[in-house]
Length: 298
Image (cartoon, rainbow, N blue to C red):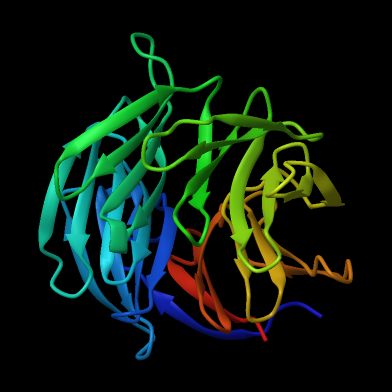
C-alpha cells in the first residue's frame, strides 16, 4: 500500500516551478521550502496546513535546514549562506561561501552552520564550517562534487555525500579535521540522512540503490534497490522508515531497514524534494501540482 495522502497545500507561483531541499522546524512548527525557481523561501504553517509567507532575497536557493528555531539556507546564485530566525523571519546574518553552495546543516545550540559548495572553474569543491556568532569560517577541499550532509546527535562530526568518487566523507566539528572517506558500492551518492539511535547512515545513490552505512566502522551493512536516481532522503525515527524522493518517474520509495519491507507512492513528475514533519507526516513538494502533497507516515 502507498502512503496515504492527507491533503494538498498550494504554493503561490509553484506550478511547474523549481524547488529544492526543505526543512521542518519543531519549535515554530513551520516548514521552510527552498523555492529555487523564484529565489525565495516558502513557509508553511504545519498545524494549519496553510502557506503563510513567501520570503524573497535568496538567489538560487538550493536548500533550507532548521534547528531549534534557527534556519540556514544555501544561496547558490549569490555564493552566500543566510541565517534567519524561524519565528520572526529576521535575517541574523549573511555569509560568503564558496561557489554554488549546496548541502547544508545547522547546529543551533553550538552556533554552527555547515555548507558544502560545488565550486566552479576557478575554485574546486569545498566544505565550510561557520561560527555564526563569531563570524569566522573554516574550509577544506573536497575530492568531488558534494551533495547533502548531516551531523551526528552530539554535533561532533559531519557526514557528506560525494557524487564521484561515490562516498560518504566525514569530518570532525568544528575544525573539519580527522577526515575519513567511506566508499559506497553504488555510484552517485546523493540524498543522506542518519539514524542517531542505531548509528546508521542512509545514502540514496544515482545508480538506483539506498545504501546503509555503520557510522562507527564506516562499513556498508545493507543496500536496497530504488526506482531511479534519487534526491532528498529522510529517516523517520518514529516509524523506523527511510523515504527517498525520486523525481523521475515521480515517486517516494519507502524502505523499512529492519524488515526490508518496501512500498512506493506515486507523487508527480519532478517531485524530487521533501520535508519530514516528525513524527508522522511527509511533505512532498510537487511542481506538477504547484503544491505540497501531505502524506501520512505511520
